[in-house]
Image 1: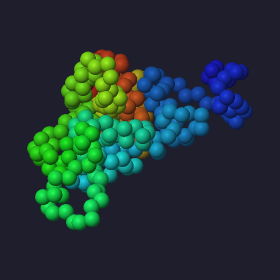
Image 2 (image 1 turned 180 degrees about the vertical axis):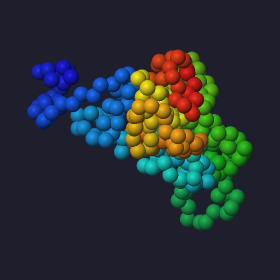
Image 3 (image 1 turned 180 degrees about the horizontal axis):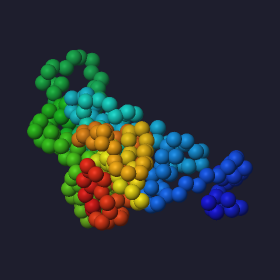
Image 4 (image 1 turned 90 degrees about the vertical axis):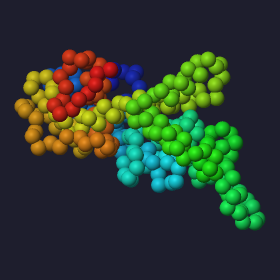
Length: 282
């Protein structure tokens, strides 16, 4: 509070105190309760001077498109029949993850380049074509049948395991190669994919807290729903549906779920765990 009121602060805070008509204080019995309430108020009122979490409506997801070779694309909502990853805070971040994952595993980013040929291609000629990404070493050209279906499917499986935070062996091997090379061409991709793996692991743990009662200090129970936060005294609701595997986190709930997950991990194994949810301590 002092940092916002003192003279000589950041210019974008100038004059903001004159806009306040009254100040409210709400006691909290634990740090986690305070953090969750803060996140809920920012989500609900979107105050102009709070940069973090106020732009959750602009979050985006990555999903597997309907294309033939498991290509990924950015979407605004977690819809579609295939896998969906996220949400991510920035669209450019999601685009960078798609490109880096495609380069690491040699996956397609079609539509491919269309050759400018006057005569129609014979079938065997069409299958032999590959776009420039193949010749640059960034794609295995499944559209030109330069890789077997089983091999390509295994690459897609490893990509999915990385983005969901389940297995980082692929990125760990790349990081070892980069450490032994002064100027590795995949160095920036490794940074992007390491952040993507950590984000996926966090979201996977956070997903288990959705609709699950979270014990707070003083006998309070917090429940994070897709539409917001509920804190009440006493036992948890009996009618709440527990999170089912494969459901996607909503933009509105993602920040609060991540806050609760990080707090429980930092507090250590002795922290009370939410009923109906198992959160592994790392």
